[in-house]
Length: 564
Image (spheres, rainbow, N blue to C red):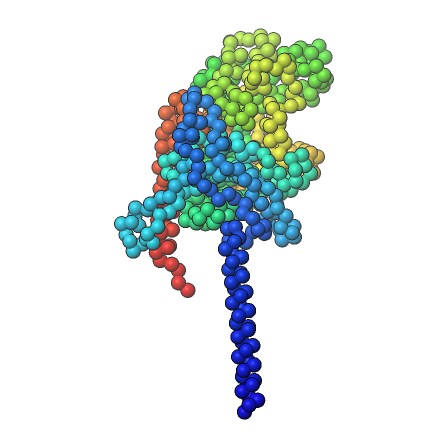
């Protein structure tokens, strides 16, 4: 009996010391947790937060001052945002890369972000937990350029954010700007430059930001123009649990092979030509004269003396060769590109947008170019000189270049973007384009699928998948999706691949008479045509409903939690 009593005493003593050790361990752990900096609860690999915890921003008076100046002056609002670099996964769709990450540049702008009181749930206390909700999140799906271009130029987002108390997020597309997985000059590791990888970047980023900033219930509306608009559309389609609505401006989502009815590969050139006609405000004979000028340039270039004349007309720099017919063709390709960009940037005010923010084009640049091709019955020499002068509106936008080089783009930024986009064309963004010289003002250039594929193999060592985008995103069979706005403008050559009619009551098409490339995304100006004012009003109304519906849906879900 004594032995049993001693055993019990020893057991009690052991249990006592175990209990004390457990308590001490818990106290140490609690103190450690209290001392640690707050980080996101999402299971990201690095321990430090990758988004800033936002503090109240500088006064709205500062913001208003920054937006002062000429009515159509390009705005620079980057100082109102916080820049950070998010550790994004290089390959979202492989488990074998070891979770390798890269620094993706993101700007968060909270100058207008505020808590939002939900009146509906105040009136119905049974559906409310008594708390206000943070405002919505406006997310720009960055496309093929430095993201600061879109931050400064997409005035619609800034103006609308003030009305609804939204947080603005501008995310840079991988490989562009400063978001380079393998370094800015590395062009040998482009295999992760795809729309799917970019969308996965954005999806993970939004989930992180919402968690980190306590904005779990904030509706997310994505915005994007051109390729960014395509991404915005596909983002809503592929990640509807993350994106509550998408505004896609000038997004040619239907410009791929495999569409039914098929995409008109000549539609781009037809609209460029339309912009050089009297109907679009240009001089009467411009399109006709431009169409004639290509043959004139080719005929004159048949001799060495003629090529010298052409070189002088285009003010080519010394040392720029023009010794063969292939070089002449390259020169004329370069020249027609000027009309393409002036057509896209045919805005009613001076703008730097088409120049990647480096310089400025005049208001209605196509009309300005057409002033050099306006006369009836122009001689061959006048046509050649007129073509060269029209092209210089684009390439010599500073009006201070003494000579030009057809082997270079309009500026280094635009040329770098063009090289990366060429790789994307050669992989999944295989968008056919042709010209016939009859329905447009150019020289015949049928799209040669075989040549394009072989050329991609030669330049990049890759073979395009011509039908991949249609297979991945559904082509024209998108009626089962919802909450997307597609806007297109009369002067925009990409409208031929855009959605021009309502598909359902939640897939909206907005058409803008007198509108160039996503004009409705730009800052409001006194030069805006009435059609764009009406378009923006309609777009605001639709998005406001999306925001209200999203809050209501989240409120109902909170009031009636799912039971197991």
